[in-house]
Length: 262
Ligand SMILES: C[S@@+](CC[C@H](N)C(=O)[O-])C[C@H]1O[C@@H](n2cnc3c(N)ncnc32)[C@H](O)[C@@H]1O
Image (cartoon, rainbow, N blue to C red; front, top):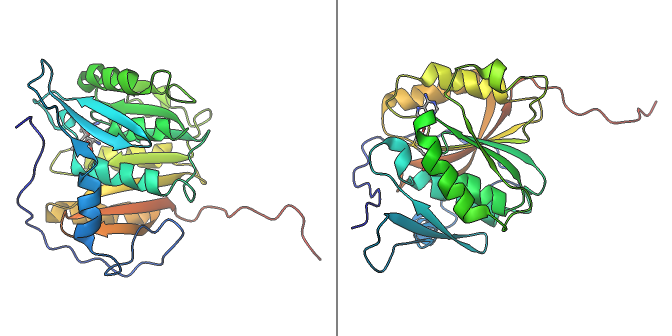
């Protein structure tokens, strides 16, 4: 085929605890067939009808045809199903999660689908990844957002845990949303990843994180993540082993009413 990352084995059994529901919720477990929504999500993807010079995959989101050029040599070079799940959520929940004029950062953006969809929905987006991924990421972002977005997205290096204060100073960087799709897998930078979430997340920042479960180690990352953040599952696709989470900093100060009634 054209290099689509089709995954056929799902090896882990994941047990999710009951979570409180919020306006962010996409589906209640058992309310609609998981497969039905998964099919809807996967239908957003299309492929070239002829052999092209460059390998690309197409997607329909936010009223646009998005073409993603893929390399085939590393993890960030294809579009992973978690990115589709998060993009679908953003598009179908644009009222509850209104991105217009919001400041969004995506970490581990890969080929850029989520950043592109968030930009098309009106956000000001900073798409980040390792230096070697930035050329292709920049290309996809430009091709799919130029003259189509309220705010032109930018692409920046962010290697997890490295030079965070230098490149993203706490005093001047404020993100309304941190987005991440499929950033937890068997890599040696899980500590640095957690550090990065911690560094970028302010009291009012919302983290939207699509997590693909593969191994026990990844479940442990979720436990560690919960020591710093309140985590809420907002949708769950057992047939893909993907869960979508919303998280906010633990122990954050709630907004105070402007006038106290005595
Ligand atoms: C499985 S891919 C997911 C890509 C994209 N979010 C998607 O869902 O299609 C993981 C991404 O994390 C990035 N990544 C891995 N280790 C990283 C690190 N130490 N610092 C920054 N990004 C990293 C990879 O380059 C890759 O783009």
